[in-house]
Length: 112
Image (tube, rainbow, N blue to C red; front, side):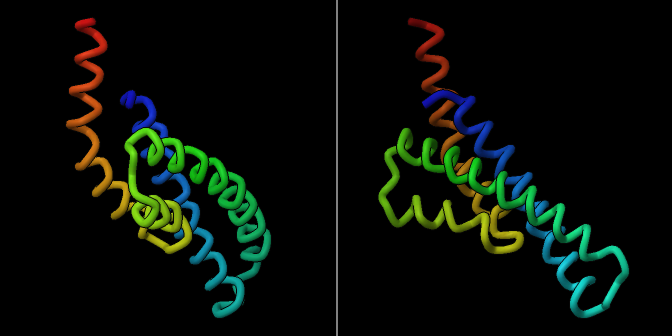
């Protein structure tokens, strides 16, 4: 597995995580606090999160297939983008697990 596969997963995990937190704050502002302009903010952030979450799913599935994860672990990572702040914790755990593996594999490719 190339390090670039892990890097693009990490970037999308953070982006979708931030957008999901912003979306939750926008929904609270729209429905609970009745803030003017929150509806437009929620619409834009929701649209962006939706499309980028699809891209996150593709990258996470690619990472999982190359890392040869069991189905349960793959589903856990895929669903992390739907729970606010979960993507940050899952990304950190996955990175700690895969960074040493990716570095060793990249070094082996360079030597060959």
